[in-house]
Length: 221
Image (cartoon, rainbow, N blue to C red; front, side, top):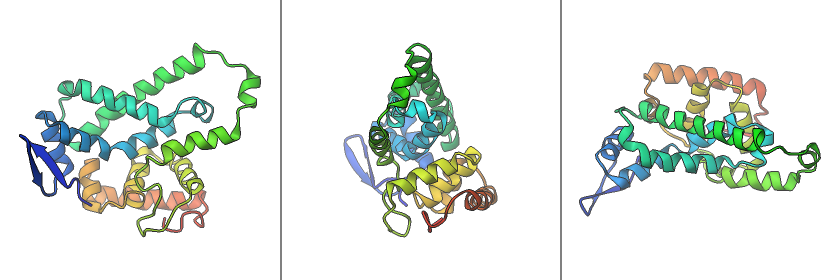
């Protein structure tokens, strides 16, 4: 999968394939187009983390996509403070900001804004589904599997919930491979791990996933 189809540099469009590492370097050099494409590569990762960190009850009031969007804005604002050079370091930097934003959301919506038990119990199930659908549609690979087969929204939710029972590194490796359809080489670059390490994450993650999930929902796993 191409990291990007083109970048705009000095007013000129440059065609070709750019690795995630090259996008990190270009972004730090002030290339806003590269930064936009770089952040887009991490949308699925951040949505998965936001969904993992937010409780089911809090997700009724806080859309994971809003947390990710806030993280994007902060990343653009604070990019000069980023001292890393690799995709893995960039991912860790984004992850830290996202966790802070989740913590702020928890404080704002759980601690300072008391909600009655009655309102929580009477929350509309349909509204929950509609809210979930909004962020699910932003997940790379949320509508089709690597084989091009349509995936129901319910199956995506089931997969995400199952991934939350795995260590984060295993969950991310599986998401990149089986939802985004990335080749092993690109996953290696994105995660900053060796071929052997990524292969091990995929193997162990799939073994665990198959014990906790009905594979009829996601036969491509």
